[in-house]
Image (cartoon, rainbow, N blue to C red; front, side, top):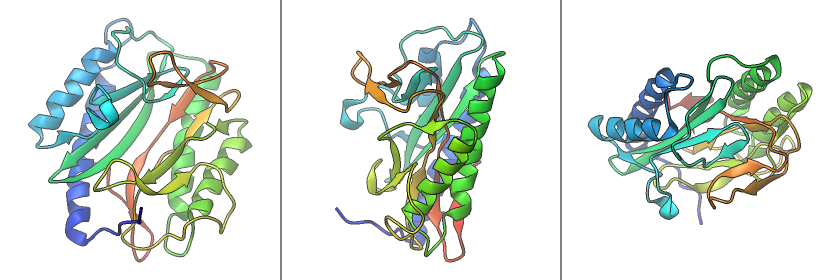
Length: 250
């Protein structure tokens, strides 16, 4: 497969998809309450909002995935399935959504804490969000996917966390997953060179314990092997002539 550079009009469609997705994530995050909100309710809210705002779910039906929203709780790193689980105070919840708008899509995720939790879990969430910002700082023409991976890895390890093994960001736009892969580990200067017009989903996924992961018995959720918690933040961005433009913001 080739790497598709996007035209200005295509980028604007991805930006519109990104605005829809960002609004949905904010609304779903605000709806989370201990002992009340279930992950199924969040998925239903996300699908309703996607359609009302003029978009189309990118995940539902993709490779037979059954839901609009990925809801990954605690040890679930990504691809968590809404299952009717009631959220409890202290849970770490990742909300991950893809939205199509006029044939082009985005991919974005946030992690939130339900109610109150301990210092180390708060720290994991904070450091993961910071790792995304570190990645954005090096996402510019002439740098490489290795620079992005190194930025994430170095920030994570400085605080005692690790990127989940084998999970990476990716190109996005015409399809949910495109080339290039954007790993969360790497060496500066290695990998694919970044060029203007590349649209990437950059997504640090950090774990508190061992970085090994496995597929859960539901055959979708990717969970930490030691069942320690994980956090995940993601933006869809476009590489510009001067740096990077984040597309998944309101």
